[in-house]
Image (spheres, rainbow, N blue to C red):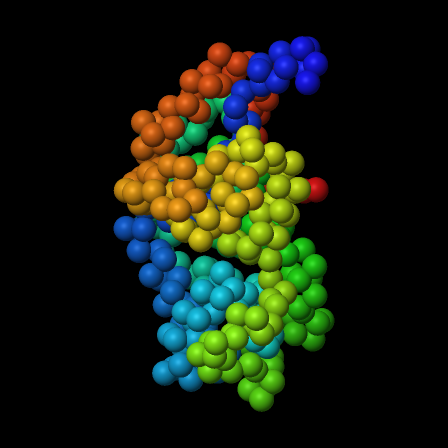
Length: 294
Ligand SMILES: [Mg+2]
């Protein structure tokens, strides 16, 4: 490396992007929203998709483990349903009033002169509602969410006849893979059908996020409450912070019991970038309307 290049390199701040999950990361699990989501997914699988109530819990846990989200798993094994209908049922009815403005987190985020991007598996409307309730809607440069990770999948589901139908049509039961039985077999992982849904914790979701938001993983810190997401994030070259846990697990560079502890644990973010704050563009633009595009 030439001397001039070395000088230029040493002037660069160590980190130039912070990548945040939303649910149970920007707010604590004690809100109970995750339990409500689980209940709504259960209800959707029984009432709208027609899965036997007695099978739902086991099936859901197999799908979640194999595919990252219940939705990705349901689509992989053959169910076809409208994405908006699913998100409306699972997220649309959540008790968002439980989330209150978080002035502490807002101050922390705004005091960091590094660009910040949301990276969530949830739909855009849910992310917008959560950020708005927390009073953080103007703290992020962009939002990577279900719609941005799945632009083609998202548009391919509806036919004109189905739009506006109260209950979308579903694939008949005979065409559905018996995931519970398959899971018990030793070769289950190798024969699992691929899902059309792109989501964490899989590498393609991270690759897409890096491309969409122009992220250099070596210079980015990733915050998420999911151990699996953190592990993939580490494999992809990100610096990783496991949120909501007192102890680090494999793949986590840091562990924070609460996102509020980020300054104590990660003072390096403020120190490494503090003197150069003027040189780094931080616009504080409204995040939700400015979804990151390629
Ligand atoms: Mg989460």
